[in-house]
Length: 126
Length: 126
DNA sequence: ATACCCGTTAGAGTGTGCTCCAAGTCAAAT
DNA sequence: ATTTGACTTGGAGCACACTCTAACGGGTAT
View 1 (cartoon, rainbow over the protein chains, first blue to last red):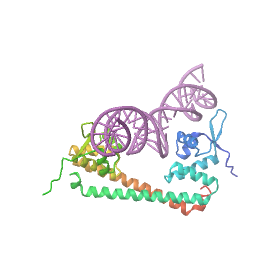
View 2: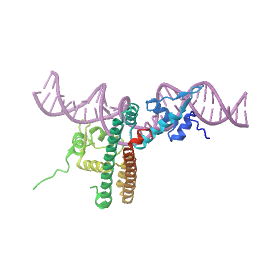
View 3: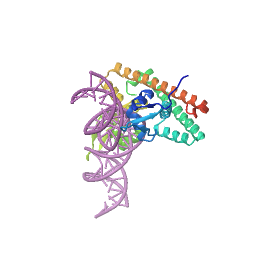
View 4: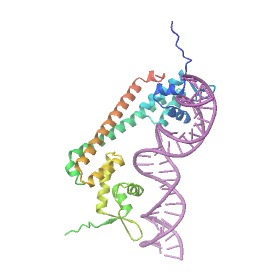
């Protein structure tokens, strides 16, 4: 019979290691209100719970989609208000932005390829 | 018989209009050494030549490929030294960066699509 | 005990690429 | 004559997302 300790607490370094975010970034996210301030230990150190960890991992998932911090913030707010419609809408809106980004980079690549193919003319300043 | 005035001079506003760059940006590019300081008129105003205009347009072409200013700088340097090999190499290196960028954005889009498709699970915090 | 590491804070600095501001000059238009 | 408008400068400010610094405290290893 196994006992998993769900009341585990983590230091900021533990969370940093688990999430790949730096301790500085974690404090920064807390400062801008992106993550909840965790409990504090005897000497004022942050004591993150398993639930805290889960929420931070969730934020990293959103960041992995290159969602800007402000939009992550909005998403978290909508999520906390259980506004599924809004959550979906934000993801979908973000998807459109990502698609636009890809379109722009693709156009850029085409231009570059053109320049490389026509390099003889380009080097004459055209 | 037409005479085209190749000794035309332009004010900073003229160049701004021709290139789509703002006067501020033109002064900024000059400050960081990206474009040559043009002649000055009686009261110290910049007097751009047709050659100046051509060079600035060329910079905008490079910027249209989303090449960072530093790399544009390198390119201009190589260009001024007539180092075609280096010019080509820089363009080619930039192409690889753009391709990497597209790959990352594409992966991001895939992740987003996945999240949208599996939205029921996601909203449960997964 | 002493060193050493990890933690704390407010606030400054970084990089990229502009963009804006104040204070001034100068010339043309009314 | 004066107002308007374009130009000049050095330097500050902006957006984004961190990243680092200084100065400090507290716990652990030897």
